[in-house]
Amino acid sequence: MAFPPDVVRVGDHTFGPNTNAHRSRLPYSFASTSYDFMGDAWEAEISLTHTSGAASNQVLAWLAGLKGPSGTFDLKVFDYTGPASIASNPTANAAASARAQVLTVAMAAGESFAVGEYLTVGHRLYIVTAAPAAVANVQSLTLWPRLRANVASGAAIEALVPYARWALANPKNTYTRNTSGARTQRLVLMEAL
Image (cartoon, rainbow, N blue to C red; front, side, top):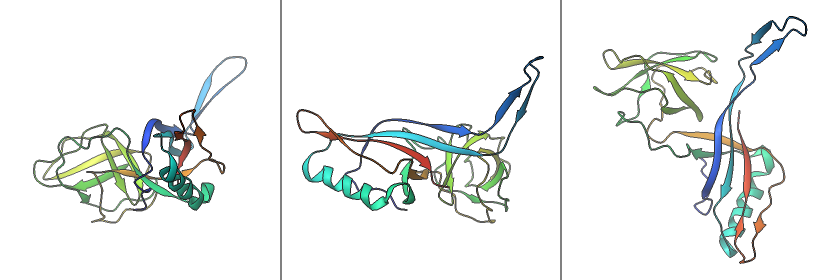
């Protein structure tokens, strides 16, 4: 995983899903039709904690090394303390195709996912939107967004410290310096697909 250097520390942030579903409304009757184009992605804005001197220059060097939106990096899910009843990372119990919404996972005895928990498969972040009870240590999870790529049976799943692969949304990322000399930066991020 390509996590940022330790001097890059996230302060406040916004984080959430974005979808390209659309609802069209007729101008006279107001009848409407919804369209799901199946395009979903995570988005975030983060403020880095105040830095000064050498630490701030290290942050700038890291940002310059990303070469704007062309570079990618991994970040753990913000404000997430981990799954409630998972003590070890599960694996895919069966193969799943790209664009599928259901992933079947094999877990240790007594473990199961709950709605709202996160997992990472192939550097892609997913949130569990439906989690029926596990049967014989196997659970079928409904995920958002849809799977980004084919998942092979036995594929590794990161559930203990889930993360997403991100890219900068803007080519220009500057810092702000306050009167006491502390520098901070606000970065707009998009899921690196």
